[in-house]
Image (cartoon, rainbow, N blue to C red):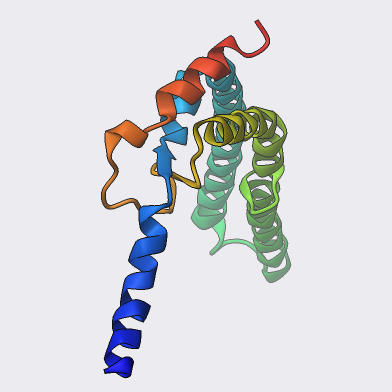
Amino acid sequence: MKRRMLLVFVLMAPALVLAQTKVGHINSEQIMQTLPEAQDAQKSLDNMVAQWEGEMQKMQADFKKKFDEYDKKKLILTDQARADQEKQLRDLEQSIADYRNRKFGQNGELFQKQNEVMKPIQNKMFKILEDVAKEDGYDYVFDKSGEILVLYANDKYDLTSKVLQRMQSFGK
């Protein structure tokens, strides 16, 4: 009998703790898409990416042009001339790969620029979220736009609009 009571208590304990826990959620993607400062930062990043992609397309077009020229006359080239042109093509291909990695790679300029431009806005959002959560007595707040999946979210706990309003009036 004692074991059965202990088992029931162990199984019920998480439910009792959860019943006293206040949980909320936000949609940070919606907040970032609505804020003018975040939109401006994203436009700046998009313009920079478009410029880099344009440069990369020029480099790839130049490579294709040189490759096609080489391909047309490779049969009449001397072994040394063929080897020289093949090395030039490999070097050009490597420089394209280096450029792509330097701009778009894991620690590339895009990553660094995103961090530089978006991090202050995200930090501001997290600070305001923390203030709202503390004021309203929330124990946990999830972001339902990210990798954390919320299968059910009661809209009465959605803090997105409250955080967004504060973000928009912050510093006015």
